[in-house]
Length: 272
Image 1 (cartoon, rainbow, N blue to C red):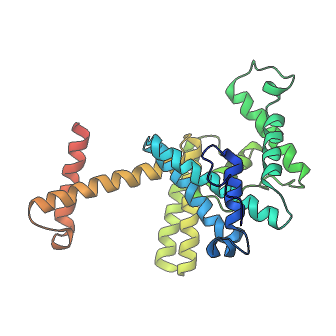
Image 2: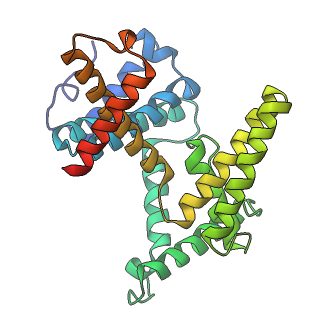
Image 3: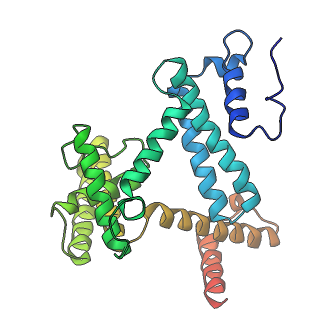
């Protein structure tokens, strides 16, 4: 019979969590679901847990954040356990790698460089160090190493930032807005004359340039869109409430009425 002392030790810390995951993945006595998982099947959960951490922070729900951070930590433990089983890496080797990276990327804290520089200069230095790291991995192209599984808007901004570092960038927002107008016109033309695949391509071009405008304005497009989503939910809920006060549902209304209620909600919010 397995020794469960560590498993049930509330003060077991990180070793306890690692042992729990090892036991869950044990091919003889573990959980059938956990045993069946692989990197590909777990990756979507990892992404989901990261978003749930961000959501708890946005709502300033610190109690929930504690739990969500635990869920996210579990994802790292899950991947490292599978890595250990395959002989690729371990939790300890992952911890060593990130620790070494942080020390190397902060010579102004852990080395001989001066801390007497701006945050902007530190960002420039950080990017130089990262570029050297990519070169060491044979990632010599400007756009190498930008993760493919990032949210598309976030990845667009990162790609544009990389290109901007080598001078491939518009000098100001006027040029970007002109390009948005151009791309919007091409999308209308595609809608009227081209195939669905070509319409999708033109739509992607438009989103890409809008992401570029966000970068020039120093706006996180993902955060901005999340805020707009929340605003839409808030306002549409208010429209539903107004209809409910009349004994109606949205299905029993029409666009004209709902649009008028929407305008009332907007006006109320602006007057608060």
